[in-house]
Length: 238
Length: 238
Image 1 (tube, one colour):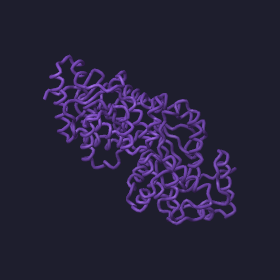
Image 2 (cartoon, chains in turn yellow, cyan):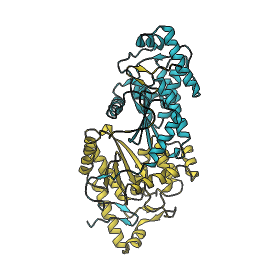
Image 3 (cartoon, helix red, strand yellow):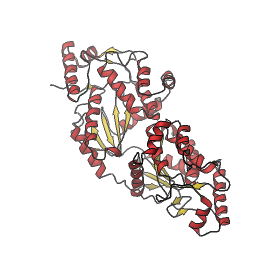
Image 4 (tube, helix red, strand yellow):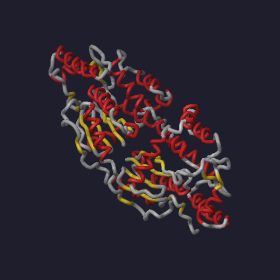
C-alpha cells in the first residue's frame, strides 16, 4: 500500500498531522507493507525567498493584533506539544518553500526523503536558527544523509526537480485538494487535515480491506507473448 | 505516473522487456513524470540456491536435447542482442533469486534499485562470473552504490525485506499476473510480456490521457478540519 502526503514546510498542521498519521500507522497491523511518499504543495508559491517572522505575517493576514497572532501561534504550539513535538516559543519564520520541495524530490531519488522532511520540519518549527537562512538548507540536506556536493548542485539549478514539484501540485489539484495536509491512500481514499490518529488507522484499515486491485485494462498483444512463467519461458522459433 | 515492473532475474524476457520498455519510455513526451518501480516475482521459489548451468535445465524442462536447448537459448540471445543488450554465449546459470529480490527492496529504500537491477541483469546474462556465485551478490550491491556493510547485513538476515518480496508476489497474483515481465501503469493498465517498444509508448500515452484520478473516498471529518490553505491556517480556539 502507498500513502502519499501532500504538505508544505510552512504548514504547522502538516507538522502536527504527520505525527498523528505516524501514530495511526504505528497502530496499524500491516504497517510494514505501507510505503509513505511526501508530495509537494506550496501554500504560497509567490512568497518571497527571504525569511520573515511569522507573527506579523499572521497578524496582517487575519487582521489581528500582534498579541492575538502570538496567542494563535501559541495555541497551535500547544497542539504540537500535545503530540510530543517540539515547537518554538515566540514564532518561527516563513518564506518560499519551492527549493525545499525540489530538494525533497532529490532526496526521494536518493532514498533520504523521510530524513530530510523530518529535518526541515524540526528546523522550521523547533529551532532558533531559521530553516530559511542562506546556507541552512544545504546543512540540513547533509544532516539528512545527502551528499553535500550533489545537493548543492540541485539547489543551484532552479530547474532541477521543478517539474516534479509542479506535477505534485497539479495532481493534488486534480484530486480536489484545497489545503494541506492531504493524505491519499493508494489513490483511492483521501484524508484531509490533521485528523486524530484513530482516523488514520481507520483509513489504513479501510484501504487494506479494499486493496484487491480492480481489473487492469490490458494494452498490447495477449499475455502469452514473450514472457516467462512457472512452467518456463516462451521459446522463440526464430 | 508510476510504472511497476514485476520481473525475475532468471527471466530473459524480463531483461529484454526492460530494454524495450525503456525505449518506449524514451519516446514518451512526459517521461520525466514517470516513476519506475521494480517488483519481485520468483519464477521458481523452490529453486536451489546453488548456481546451475541453464542449458541442461532447459533441456530437462522442455524435454529437449542439449543441442536443442542450446539453440533455443541462442535464439533468445539473438533477441537480446537485437535490443542492444550483451548476452553470454554458451549459457548462463540459474538459481534461487529470493536474496536478489530482498536486496532489490533494500536498494529501493536507499534510492539504488535501478542501479542494482541493471547490475544483476548484466551479471546474470552477460558476464562469465555467475551472479549466483557466493559473494558475487554483495560485490554487485557495492557496484550499484550500496553500503557494503549494510547490504551484507541484509543478506545475512533471511527475514530482511522477505515480507516485501512476498507482498509483491501476492499483489501480482491478485492482479492476474501468471508470468513476467508484467508492467502495471498507475495500477490501472497492464502490459504482459516483452512487447514491442511502441506498445509501451502507447500504454504510457493511454495512461497519461486517462490519468485524472477518480474521486477519492473521504475518510474522517470534512476537510475544513485542522489544515492550512492558500488563505491561511485554521486557528484553534483553544
